[in-house]
Length: 339
Ligand SMILES: [Zn+2]
Image 1 (cartoon, rainbow, N blue to C red):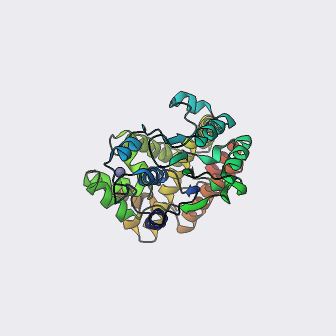
Image 2: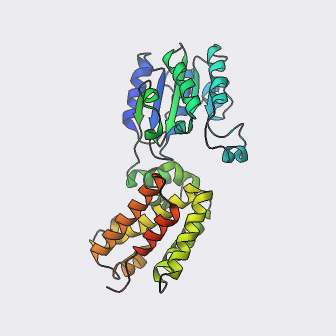
Image 3: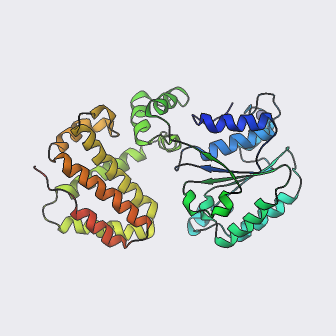
């Protein structure tokens, strides 16, 4: 059974290719973080090497060895050096050495399965040298060797690499589908499943990482009180101080600051939904009454204006604008309360 939830188009295309024994030599799995790219890649690696008639069975020795990361013919290549998280954090790109090692291994026949599968996580992080080296490999496909390139930032990959791969796009799940599967397959309690299904924006992997403990709930309430504190602060001093804090944090951990911006966007989008009478569609479903109260402080135009400001801040950061300036402009764009 395929472990991936949803993604019916990608799965049926792969099933047809498996049936006809017409697999591509390289696939590019594209989709937002936590949408299920690695799950689908492992499903495909299992299906290619599975011993059962209905593949992937998930139960044969081969499937189990792939699931536990022990199969000799399925390798995951990414930033994470040799599984050392500290080493992974210190790296910003996938270097040519890793691609050369991979090429060397790709030249040897499969050791225990039918196919050698190389899964490249974060393919957009390939250095230029590494990408050129990989391109040569993709241009000379070998029998029984399949490359699976995973990325959430397709625009950063060289067009020459993209053109050598069959592209499979993965899409976020609908809220209802995410909620159902969280309760039924992973036994997440009802209220938590309801909230996580909304907060994950259809990217189930995030919800599954968050579900086992409540660290994320604590982080979220800290973010809420911080945001409301900044919004409620009199004068601009507090806002500019917050902008400076975000800018300095951005220098150390871009992803974390992007998460803060995403959170702000969700919150203001929720207020917009409340304002136009669609309160049932909000993301922060457990905080409806605060949202309703807060939405009264602003006009619809002000809420829309600030949403545009947050979106534009996100875009500018991606284009390497000066973070301090971006956050200061954003903080000054917060509309005043009490309209
Ligand atoms: Zn199997």
